[in-house]
Figure 1 (cartoon, rainbow, N blue to C red):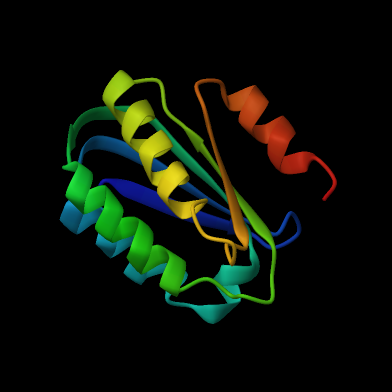
Figure 2: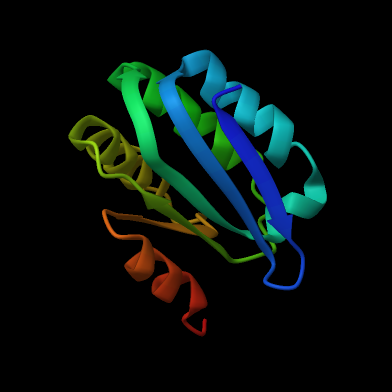
Length: 128
């Protein structure tokens, strides 16, 4: 897998670090690995794409991923996801994903995309 996952129970956060190429199968494998656990759905998330070297995804795949991941959210819990992306394509597709996720009134997970890890950490640490 092109990602590693760690869970920090004290900070109530899942962190995934990605490297190499990212494609549709890997994104869905990540969801199966992490978000299919109902307890994980209540945690904030930090996705680190800084070491990604290639993105092999279409806009349709991002839209499908947004619909699928939204269906797994816990509607009773507000949570945040921060994405760090420094490669232009990864940054742009992450913004597209965030826009698709924010497009419904019932959205309970807030997404932000950053090109700076410190800014992403600061945002996740803000009080709700």
